[in-house]
Amino acid sequence: EYGNLTGMPNCWKCVPGTYVSSTGSIFREDCLPCAKGTFNADHGSGACTLCYAGSYNDEKGQEECQLCPPRTYGPDVGATSVDFCDFCPRWHFNTTPGASKVQDCVYDHSGAGGLRSAAAVLIALGVALLVLTVPTEDRGERW
Image 1 (cartoon, rainbow, N blue to C red):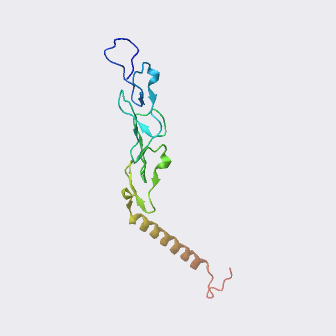
Image 2 (tube, rainbow, N blue to C red; image 1 turned 45 degrees about the vertical axis):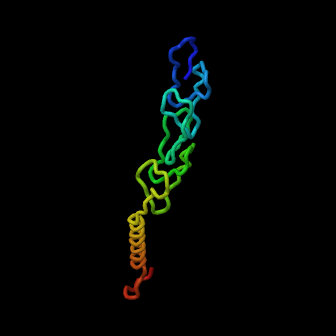
Image 3 (cartoon, one colour; image 1 turned 120 degrees about the vertical axis):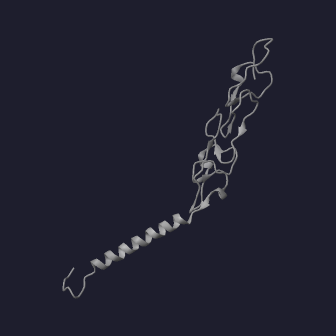
C-alpha cells in the first residue's frame, strides 16, 4: 500500500502483479512488478508468490502463472520458462495441463501397440513388393 497525502484514512493498494516491499511508501512507482517465476493475484500485497509446481511464469508483473502444457510435467516451483516443463517419458502421456510430477504421466500401451502394428503392416508391404518384383524361372522373362 502507498499514499502521498497527509491524513489519508486509507492507503492506495498496489495492483495485482505488483508488490510494495517497504513500509511508508508514498508513490505508485514504489509498487514493483513481481519477478519472473512469481505471481501476485491480490491488491496491496507485500510479496509475490513462487509459481507452483506444474506452472511457470516467463514475464514480470503477472497475476497468475501459466500451466505446463499437456504431455509435460513441471516438478520445480518458481519456474521461469516453459523449458522447465519436462516431457513425459516415452509411451507415457497426460492430457491435463499443469501436471507437477512424472507420476502424472500414464503409460499408454495402446500407443506403443499401434506403432508396432503399423510397423508390421509396412514390413508386410515391403515383403509383398519384393515378392512381386522378383522374376521367376517359369515366366521365362528377364528383368
